[in-house]
Image 1: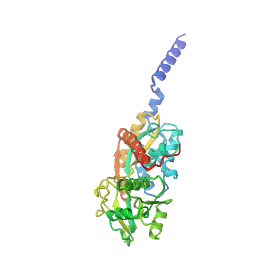
Image 2: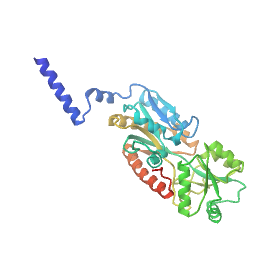
Image 3: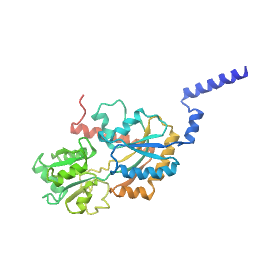
Image 4: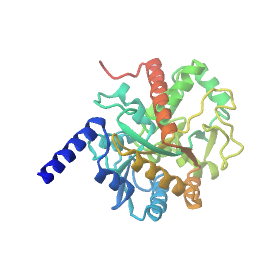
Length: 328
């Protein structure tokens, strides 16, 4: 009788806990001991590039901190949104994480999806932002951004620029620039920056907006860098002005970070945040970013979630103005 009474009480307590949304003792213990096995971190770009290489250094640092391997898995394609998409069918235990790139925040307006980039992800930490710039051939008559805008104004739709693809951050930022300046550019999408660089060097396009795949060509005198797009000037190209200081009203670094599936235990999210924060503060991670003219850009979990909500609203405004919404 005593045993039946004890079991009945235990069942009632468990039911009450479930009703109140309280974690069970085993779940709490699991969070306290996290991690107990390897962690997968999925990124949305190919191996060897400006996203992949710094992430591998970060993962190596984090492995030492967590005492478990952090394994990078590449899932390129679809503008870098596949990792976030995979989080919608992933167990929320903290052992499978994803990089979130800016294109994720415009998905609700460009693609039919059944999940919300703000509500259906657990934001862990923002890590860094990309370096972007606009380049032309060194023999181009366009010497400055002022020349670039003036040419576009005098030749509507004739000034061509290449980017990594339609609806990418680079494409939308160039169109935002055109909209702000009341000019027209002609967009030529490419599959990647190696393709766009060859097109530019071969005279098939007049300019390219991209990450610093152009850096080596600028340094060897084949291309001219007209502007960079960060908050401050590039340490690598300190003589080149930013769009902001030129009075063009744009700062674009396309911040990216790490998320977990919706419903991940807050204790696990906190452990992940703290571990990755230590990992990103190590000098070798800063050095890995610097190779691509990038810098750490830290946001904690709450700040990162607010950034995501604000960015979704901003992306909608730009896409609405450009008339690039998905078909109804």
